[in-house]
Structures are given as C-alpha cells and as structure tokens.
Length: 253
Image (cartoon, one colour):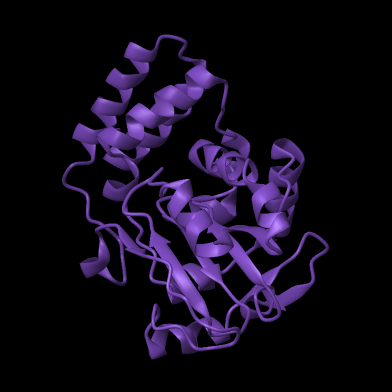
C-alpha cells in the first residue's frame, strides 16, 4: 500500500531523535519538504502568512489597544483556558489586573517551544522587577500541560487550550508548509545539538494529532485591562521567535 506524504512525514519524524549526525537530519528534513511541497496550508486567515509583529504601543492601564481588531477582541473575550488544576479561566483574566507576556506554543511536545520557554524564562528576573507575569499557553489537554511543566521546569504560569480557541481568535496560522521550512529545519538541528529534544509521546497524542500538529503560535504583551494588548507577534513558521529585546521593550520599559 502506498503511503501518503503525511504518513511518510510522520514516519520520518519519529526517527529524528535517533539521528546523531546533523547532516543526516538536514537531509531528512529536506526530503520531508519535497514530499509536502504541494500540500495546502490550512488557515482560516490565509492572508496573514507573513510574520506579524506589532511594536510596543504605550497607553495607560485599561485603555483599549489598537493592535487587535474589534472582531478579534470580541472573539478573545469568549476564550477560556485551563490551569494545571483543571480550573477554567477566561483568557483575558490573565492580564485583566496586571501586565503579562503570554507565549503561545505550537504544542506541548514541540522542541522549538521548549526553546521558546527557556529563552523567555531567562529574562523572567527583568519581568518580575517590572511586575510583569510570564505565561505560556499550549493547544492540548491539562495532562499534556502538566507533562510540559514537569519536563521543562518552566518558571512561569502554564495553561492549556484544548479547543485552540485562543489561536483561532488571534488568527495564528496553521499548515504543513508553515511547519516544515528550511529555516525551521536548521533551527531544529541546532537545538538537537544543544541537547533539546522533542517529546514524541506528547506530539502524537490524540489532541495534537487530531489537529494535524501544524499549528503555529506567537507572543503577546497584554494588560492591565482586558482589551489592552500592546504587542503581538504571530509566527509565520515554526520557530519564528521575535527578538527578546522587542518583547522586553514592550513589557518592561
């Protein structure tokens, strides 16, 4: 029986953490790219595939920010995320009474997201000094979020968004071709050489596989005030981290 490109992609991906030679990993990644070059990009907002980074916009606490459209803001008001104890929380409550840096992971098993968590946590002392909370949200269930917390020892708060409602409200992109790119492949090789690893068990759990695992995330700086979002970065591809200086400028200066 012939295998579909997606089946081949999953099969190849399972072996990445067994490959010690970076050149072999790059070859595998290139093969995956060629297999999937004609696959569609799944996005409800296909016109927003380029990186979207809105720089810091000053404003007093509680003032509505112009970063998001009225439709986006209304959709976000309806989103609920879950803490590690299973409590449902309206997402805007995370920044209603404080300023917060909120990172959105691709999924809880993602090696690139583990690096993102570390690179943000490395500046948590600066955020703490400015009274800014550090939050990470991932598409998946509470058990996946707990596993991520245990594995990464992330210093900030972690929430699960099983329905990926926040991702849809913020119109983050999703698609095979936003996941398997040359730049992302090189970054994965670099991270493996640094000792980072994908958690394949988390990556192939039902909640992730059912949505394809192609979701991209982003980073926002929000609050105080439910509608006060002063900075937003939408990943155009896997591993598309913004400059940490831009985030600190938005949250702490």
